[in-house]
Length: 205
Image (cartoon, rainbow, N blue to C red; front, side):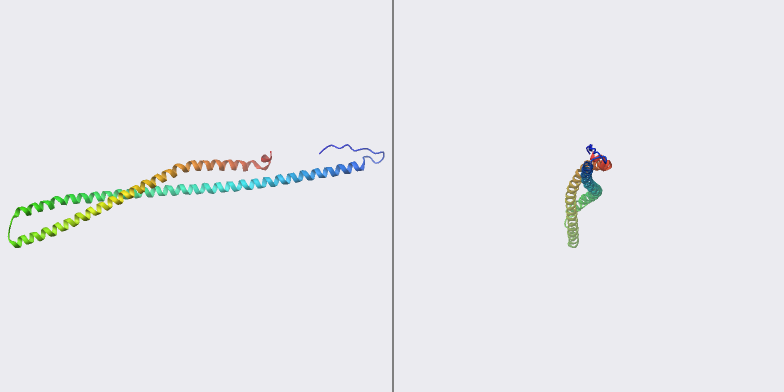
């Protein structure tokens, strides 16, 4: 507000029109200052609301990323358990293969023994032939069954192992990206919190 010099009159002190103009000018200037302060207050309120909304969004993002990290760790544990199950299945398949190999010499020995006997009586030959046929068929079925089970187990093991390895790689990629994303989010949250703590007065300056 500018300093005003009032004219003096002969009687009654200062000039009335100068005083009135001074009061009106002071009122206008005060109204302008009040309006500017109100506008600045509204601007600061809007800015504060926007910053609070950003802080809430960043907090929600941080919570979502934390949930994603926990989910990734849970999937990693499940993948590890599945891999252990596959290893157990492979051990069972190896055991079945060993059992087949153990039975093979007995069957071959039986065939060699039968070839040495010669031509005995018809009933004995018939019984031996029936026994051979039954045993060979049973052994063949058992061998085919073991071989089929072993093939299925190995196929399932290879497919599951490839899937587990792929999932483990995805989990590792997610786990390596999460700390950087969480660090960035934490930095943004700290910056916004610092801006909120400064208050409207410091922001205006």
